[in-house]
View 1: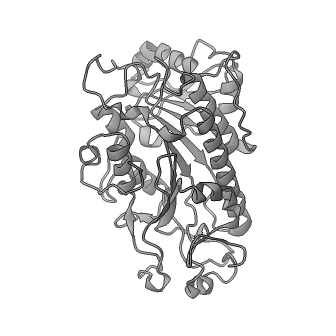
View 2: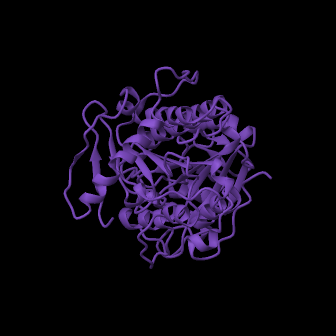
Length: 405
């Protein structure tokens, strides 16, 4: 599909679903070679706008940090100390049980060679797993599912919650976008007929397969007879998205936590907006990180409740980080590297990657790249799913030792 097409499911559902080209494509034939790794769930959390890494994972023992951030630096006595030189933002306190149980990994210095500081281009690079000088059409997960399709019984390859952007599932994956998750959960079923916002040359194809997406979304919808989760989810849009994600999993799981026939998904992607903190960053970032930490704590609780914690890998990503030096508006401008969080029951917790050395900034005042983000993807594709990561990423990237055997 050369441009986005949206299906607006009637007012009763209040949700918008994006229909990719391949949704109606024939699933893998029974008995075809298939990695059993898709029983392992991936949850991606986009920190949209580019989170400031130095105020998230704080190099408090480096005096240069406070020289560069005289106004917005997190005071040492407020930060949550992890070791002799590293601490977390105080809003991330709800993550500490995960850290202490060694189920939370923090990968520092993540970016890519010759980083682009445009929101639109850089997130495209992350979504397609391309080089900075390379333009790819399909999302990296789309390429993965093209190489080894998900089991024929799965309702969809993935679900995107709280965003109309398909990101790593763009241009070919069998993915459902729930733009209004609260309404999706409330509606008893998807209203029909489907009305098309855009008429384009692919209209006939869309009409042919619209029933597939309606049925898939309906299979993933929580039902009145289903047991309610005991987990209490935080308020706000992000908390609502997490709740929807967990209810989708509950709708698609047997009591033992295995996907029912016709109701599984391999990927869920969530988005937390607001990280483009050019002005007045301290209060804004504190609120966002609080949402992230409380959301992750509730996600872990729900996954344990569903029996899926050991089969789930949660990973953050963003288009870039922020500059080490604060600007004149008590904010930070677009930078290069950032730390990212990985959590799950089989995660080997701890600090990974390259910690910031603020005395060694490049000529633009940015930190050098320590870990290529495609190493995170290689960890998902290889150790987590058992796929040929080099074929999908078109280059060999060494997986990170984030997972327990």
